[in-house]
Image (cartoon, rainbow, N blue to C red; front, side):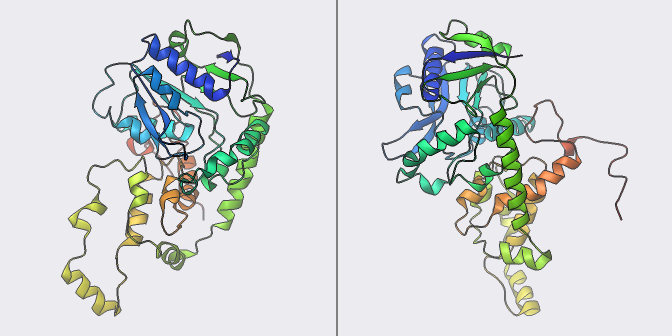
Length: 367
């Protein structure tokens, strides 16, 4: 049973206090967390080495400007961090990072991973004008009750993996009635206990999962079934109708943490239509959509990432033509992962389906 460390501070101030303690006492050399860029609500992930700069840190701010798993992998694709770093990331971001580690795109060495039980985040379009700040009271009220906060992204409303699987420290938020007065940190690993040694706070047993956590999981499961039911795509015509809106910006792959290839086929000259291909298509069809190949692009990406999609929702968030990419991908990836008994990012030691071999697999085909 993990230990719980309670501080008589707000949840966010408590996390900031922990990060400051880690830096000032030389337990870590840097802190990776969300930080304010201005007073209008703009935030970005930052790597902070000066404790004084932590005043701008907003580790629990309900916005995901990019997937932190992808950002966290950038300094460590070939080797581990040379000095300890504390990183505050959301559960889906942590799962994405685990998937990248499995692909040798990152290392968990010298990282202290901190993650909250997650109430979700707001769409990116709400960030620039500071609209999120006005909604935070109702957001934290929903978190305390184990409800789905209004106006958060569809991917968050339907996410049932909001408790981090591999965090060293869990920030206990869902069901906590006093996040404005109390910070409760669950020390899940020996590493967490070593790093927090000497940090002021009241230690107790963590206890069982709260009723609010179970309640929120049930509500999100129901919301997911509803959303999946509303997203019906009938055959090839349905695929053409929905992906026909694609303008070929490839924004969804740029933000996807699982799309890590330095040179993607869809960004290479090999995928470009040659003049002869245009001529052949025009003769055959009499007309050709420009840009071409959007269906091939989305289906190709779906095949590549289905067993490793963590449902972070950024692909839908950045789509300029409002294609529900995340919902479609999740509707496919969820049953695909269930078939393999696999959950993306659950455990760094769990082998990926495409790297395992079974002498008999899917031998039964339902008629």
